[in-house]
Length: 614
Image 1 (cartoon, rainbow, N blue to C red):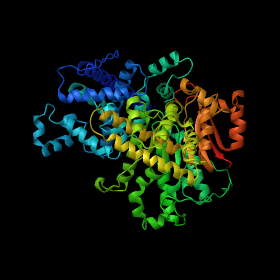
Image 2 (image 1 turned 180 degrees about the vertical axis):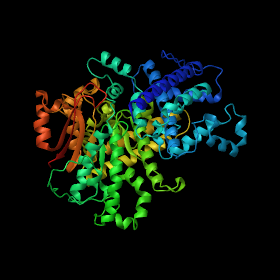
Image 3 (image 1 turned 180 degrees about the horizontal axis):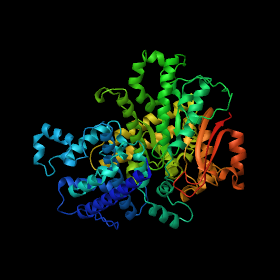
Image 4 (image 1 turned 90 degrees about the vertical axis):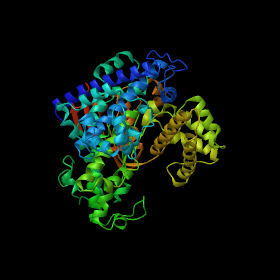
């Protein structure tokens, strides 16, 4: 995308945010008597319809579940902000789908769109509704897409409790349908720029001025570190980690070398052989994934790797299936029909502390899969469905006291004690993110209740956790399905807890490749003591700790690629990081000194790739 496109997208994003936040604030106060100053009467207006009365109860339960502390003003603000962001992302997603011919025209002409016209022919009675059924039509699209991208399109999520009124919806569509944005909707990176531009530079400046001791919470930490990674840097790092890994596994005999324009191979260099793997067993992880740029380009390379592995015919059996790629797919066409979903289900993993980032990354990966399906000529109805993406949010397990206490009481012993202590261990997940060594604390917790030592990296220890996790997930599903009062609160609780368990699973996984543009500078105030105690050699800057953590999650000869400030390569305060991490635990593959102007921040950067020695 060029500068003019990015500027237009920035203006549109800020305009859409302003109008949606204003619209939702007006609805909360004018319809539901939930005021921006935090004043919330116990009973709503007498004029509320039964449906609106029910919605008000659910909004109050969603406010109670907010992670931004006990301040009611902050909770209302957070609810409005997240509802605006989710709504904007959904309509941006529809624009992206339209531009890729993955969805019939639905928003580009508003209620005059062709898709809505056909929808109206199927249900003529919709013409009697105030908007002739346009909201119902859009919600039906959300429901259809939510079967594969539930994290963004789930209409039972808090962001779906309010809907822009007719005038606001028209204004939103007018912003998104502006002529100067038309080309942007065809670009894969547009959704990432929307994520970054949602928070203005003024908002970042205010946080820097007021948070003098470091970010005060996970949201401020996320906002201060939202920097788009340019495509050429992404390619440089992925080429020299995932690309190099496959080059070594194939002992240099791979067409991927020609595809990876930034792969650094010295003249005459021969790779040190690395055991060949079935592509389904390759795992790529971004511990601070943002909108998923590293994962998207990794997707490109993995597609080529799968094709090449099938053509070679000599890859070993997969750990995932117990069979080789040729055994599971007798023809190349059969493999290609499953290929996009194979990549999403087996290869790509990401974590972020910002729930909005995980929305965006999951959507971006799903769109990338649909692009391949389209290029292969596979019709929408014949495409393999995406059951999941391994993009999870790092956040505390839900702590709404009454709802959590009722859940713990529903569990048998000793599972109830495991759950209580696990919830406490996850308290800093939103502030520490991937730096939370939950797998180490979980080993201690399980050993205490199982009466034996547990190693979550081996099969026996993993089985012990798998049994406990399966029991917890089953109990959460049943708890979230209980009807009656506080049903919505229980459902939010069970969904949040299930996401927390997914983060724990990811934290005890070993990867072949770790890629990152990690946060840098000071940690949040809440996590400062924890990070200093847990990562004493690299506590002086978040990015140094992320590199140490990333290396610890790699398999032998696994590779890490990162873009970070360049200070670690020469400042005295980073001596331990250089001598004990970069040179003892890892070996540099390539280092690129980038200087200023690469990230949208006043910081000099370097991009580098490392290989673990163990």
